[in-house]
Length: 623
Image (tube, rainbow, N blue to C red; front, side):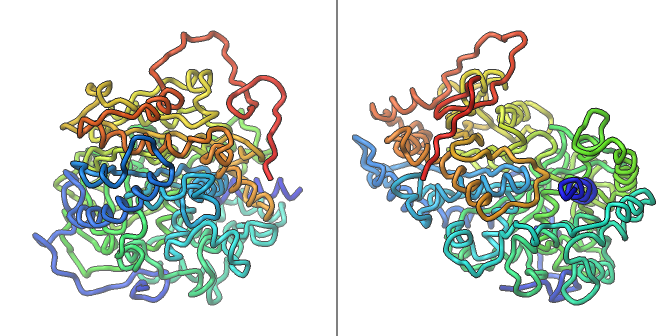
């Protein structure tokens, strides 16, 4: 019965220093700063001067970390220090963590731990140091929960949160700490049937108008003159599990304030990017042509032609006309929980995934009630994150009057357009990435569609700024076992000249698909409760995916990754690969093979240590 109530609740509501000047969740009036040309906007023709300067300073740190990594993995016939000293430009590395609820967050935590030299045994048995050598990290939805939680705790490590600090209550997903309160099905059904949103959200845990309650947070924002939607409640609910309990779960924490964190100012973390999608007013359509909007510590905006603008994130609550303030300036709108919630605001998808005629996640008798309620949310724009005033209102750079002429910008889950891995922020030509690690925890067992969509988007109107290497179709991903083991794409720049844009070649993409080694990690996106054992098993399996089962499947695996991340830099400087790296590429690079279509092909759903199989699954248990 509990599982039924959980599905019912989720079907409704699944819908996560300096502080806001209000010292709570509400934005507040501040003095307007001195700004160039009197506008908070700039054209998206390049990265910002702030980002450029920050990455240049970060590169000194990442270059040193990469030398340490390359020395440790013992590349043959290679002097790492000499290579980096003589490189015309050092490798520019980015990491992308997919969405997928707590499944993606926990798998992603294992992936990240395997890249982090602060993790126990990651140096010896995994890819420890790659995180320290990376300039960028991109995330959405469950991946954004992971990164947001770590960043808001001074970019702490997965090791620290999960294994070292037993007093910390963040990431406690067990019974009693889940997102939704136990409810009476009859009372909830009645509230749904009557479309009483105010009563429905009373079933959220921590929903209260008393001090520290979610209701009080939203009331403060409304009192300050700003609308709220279900995404505000969702973000503050997530903060109960992602942020420490101090200061009411960081209720006044701002995403723009990351720029003031010592760990960011000292360039000891990658540059964080969070992705969301824009929805045109009056429509419910989302696809690969939807506008991708990114948040970083300095700005909010998009390289897509529809927006083609970036705004100073710190002042996005300010009412503007073409970026120029028309009233008092506002600070505090970019609440950290609100931005994380925006990236995972997937309520609009429930009409497709929970209450469609063929969907089986909700009992048939409940579907009409839920469908009525969800449609009501959609009509009232309660199913998305509402950014009002619109930071891009009347932007002279915007190519879409649909998004720039409306006083409100509507955003929602960044993965619903098909790019469940947030690759677009990393593959824009302006950032000139050389290597991108793509971690795929999409629904079920991944089939490569996240990469297929990223590849195809570069040919669309919205993807004109994107560059991405060739990939096969989904059937070939499966039949060639490219989801059962890590695979590199775009290994040779000479084969990618047709994809080059303004002299920028697509990066090498290192793809890691979720697959089981010692735990079935294809849990439902709608699973909200994990025991401590389940949580740690999910994380451990994610570590196994990235480490190739603690290096037991390939003792040279970490060296092969080293070969991939230096590849573009070698090609720029005309350096021949070593024999070791050539052999690595023979093992891990997709060679462009496309098998002929197989009519009636059915994806094998079982795994062995190295591939997809049709026989009974046997998981090698690792101590």
